[in-house]
Image 1 (cartoon, one colour):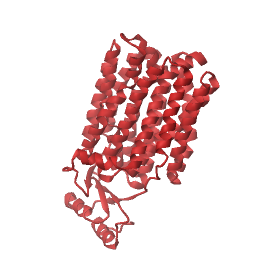
Image 2: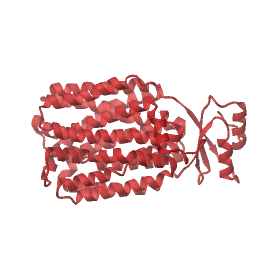
Image 3: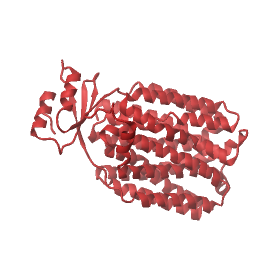
Image 4: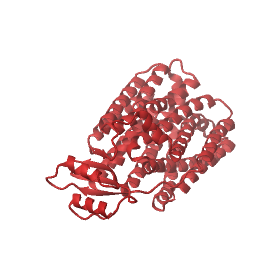
Length: 454
């Protein structure tokens, strides 16, 4: 990776980490501490945990469609402002309804897909997989750390303190956004006159993308429901208070993370993404079945959770990379928006479902979650390996009119997308090598004022 790609990956990764930690610290503790709010019921507690997902699901797609037409960074900034305001509203709440409203407002800052699209803009194809995998690992790690440290911090700052931290993290993320490069995207086909309906139709007709949407829905449905159910079960079976439970989550998460890393490398380097991906879903299905059968014993809970966290890390790391490979060039943010909407709608359904299952028999609760994952596996099974495309970096010649130069580049057959960093005088070209011929290569080398190895 060059310095621009590293700066973008670190900056966007930091924004993701701050958002995810802020959102998910609440999840493993709220089913217990939510009882302290006026008008709280098990269903409303579960709703407060998952409602942010509904806000994300509703607003992810319009924000992503806008980000395919407009500059991405202002949309991200707006999302972070909404995220901060939601944290403040929940932090000042005394009744459960205000908490629900605050979590919903925080969720309306739905910019996960726009962040992913921005990262895809400023990374070359050969390094994009690494960058996207890094984002997936960052998301997974942030969620895992939030689950581990939420129970530890709640004893120090209280539940309202966790919500205040959410707002603080949002402000810190705004600062990181300024460090991320500001690319200008040039596309072969102009999106300005393309209708929203057409944009969505072009993405929704791709079956493999829809299967990825189903996988992320099932992943976050089960994950959110699990952490509504777990605090009570860890208390009953292992005799642990909420504050002590973080010390169970953390080692399991770290072990699961470490075991998952070699499989993530195999998926990317050996181009075995489909096999690893389906294996992860199958592993999570087995984990939930094990919890359904053995959650009344400590070894059943510990073993089931370890298997689940291994699969969770694998899916969180591979899905963003897969989406970036398979999404249409002109509708990248839209495709990622649909995936993020599916993710957060799954979290919303999982929170509500977890609230309803909170006082049901343990085997039934875990069995329902296992059934969700098994059905998802059967639907996703026909998915094909993702395509592997190519790109190259070009230094924009000095004393060149960038506007005319980019127009000439886009006119070359085989160039689908051009991302320009004017300040750094660097451009990334996304190429369809099947359409490149000798004339195209010669034209590109002439415009770059040097031979290109394409």
